[in-house]
Length: 324
Image (cartoon, rainbow, N blue to C red; front, side, top):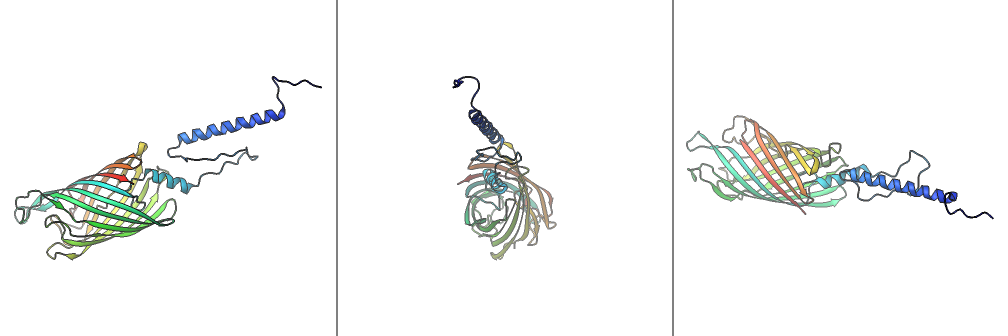
């Protein structure tokens, strides 16, 4: 009878189990390294329990659509028309624009400060279908020259409030589309309101750019604002608005957006002060950062390149989005 060897050599079965343990340990280490290097990796992953016979076989991959949607949601700030979130927004805008001067035929510069309270609500109707609701309540400080304010002093008050609804559809992981309408009521005072009821149908299409970064996308938005009732002494409103939005995700939760607002406009309504043509074409850019999972802060600046229809001389906006 052979004596047992308690030292160097081991039984073949023991060597086999040791090899399997080493393989599993190395595989687990590789998974941990992969997760650490991924920006927004998968939170749960199930490795295979045995090495496959075919050397080319691999563990099941996470579907691209799930990964893209997960990354989009992680970096979504709530400003995406086709993929909205529940949020409360504090918005401040400083804007200068041409206005009527103290004597007939002259032009002065009117400064407007706006503090707007916005609430967005997303209602999921069915898989890949959602309803987006929005309401805005603006508070204005403005210095127009008029018969009621010949000195051009600042006046303060509530502006024109609006409500909006849009139906949205995710076509796949890259494409989404939506259409809706915004209704604006003449709730402001004489010098703070357009004096008109307005309806603005809108349509947007979103194409995701996961190759650039999570929540990077191209999203052209078209809308048409038209007045249909109100004070007959006020100017009729009829203008086409367009935003060729391009959003780029940057490292450390920063983002850069070109044309975040629909400020490219063609006016078909009554002419405004200083208008010489129909087109307003600005350069409009926004930079911001998602400070936490539920808070995003951004600053937007717009300057005109063509202002035959002078929407503004200069504007800057600050947005604080609080997601819930």
